Image 1: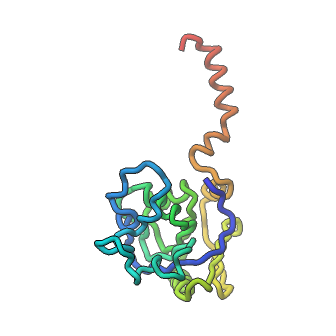
Image 2 (image 1 turned 120 degrees about the vertical axis):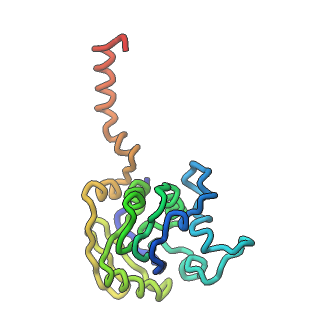
Length: 201
């Protein structure tokens, strides 16, 4: 998993509330267990018409936001079923941070496990960032995980809270496998001791 420290990038405004995981990545794309390749189907039913053509009005189809790395979203983002494919699709598209007033619990947790930083801010601050993001590609937002601050393009700063353990994992690029590998010496020692004490096992 890639480390997350400081990100400065284009933020795409998505003011819709209750964007669920089926909207993020529809069920027909859940057959794969590969984490890559899902970005092209992110928000599929909002991005494309029935013939597979891009819908010009959708934010991520607009030239200013095709390279967005930050999403400013409406309330209750990531609700619905607990599909891990949702953060996979966001990450594969290039989204590394999502800012909202609230997230569904399982989606929130899955983001951290996949290298995405979900940030909860008060409604007035999210509205400020939403307005900022609406200015287009020239309005770049900075997310500093170490300092726990979001900085709008006008210089306004918004501090945010983040769990210390989850912060440690993101800063060091540690997913569940990475955390296990940090303890590989202890695991090897345990297994060697077990073989000596219980040779029949």
